[in-house]
Image (cartoon, rainbow, N blue to C red; front, side, top):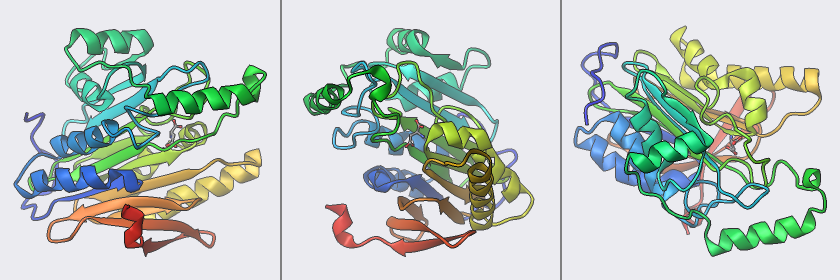
Length: 320
Ligand code: ASP
């Protein structure tokens, strides 16, 4: 479906490109790349890529088979943004929906009530005909049982055990860009907790005239810096995606360390209208990229000194 036309994007676009967080995005990126190659839309590519991760029970931080909150319930956050008309939709704490990204995308077509939380989000998905299922696999339930047996008091269940968001930004041959995120948030999180992933400007942002960014890591820290918006704003002022990521992430990391003493994991990806990408992170971080005429790649980013990022190819066996 054509969500919007690329009114603000660059003319005579000759390439398509995608970037997404973590190795888990690989299969979805391969699938969505063939759509982009055939002239498909950026929004469809983002949704296809993220749906693939959501449906895979082997990925324990997104969608089916992900890890639950402290009470053993799966609460998921997701968002979608169209970089042409800035339409955005999001859900937080949604339950039972197999594809939170698709619910978020549907919501992005509304002008009001486009960000729904908790029961309202779940009810909306149900009555709108989205596939609903018990998202907790036996394996996820067993891991929750083991973890809860260790926690004698609610607050002793650590706030940061097992995480990872799939975040994706795609550019199509027409020059349109879109971004999306999906996650079950932190394992053993407090019921009702919302991370950065559904929050525009923090977990994701995209503008087809400039580029897009998306985040993964400790949401509570990422949202303090509105890092995705910050990166897009820097690209808008002429920085390359890599310069924008380095500047936003490492400057904010230093500031937070100085002011708060501690900083969680923070990793950001970015893509511009020319299909150039950038990444910055304060931990070892895998990500995937694809571009017209290039193979889909899995790469590894590491912080390198105070304000730089080292990028290495990932060994082939990482795929197995
Ligand atoms: N950013 C996500 C959250 O805080 C988790 C992650 O990406 O690791 O919910």
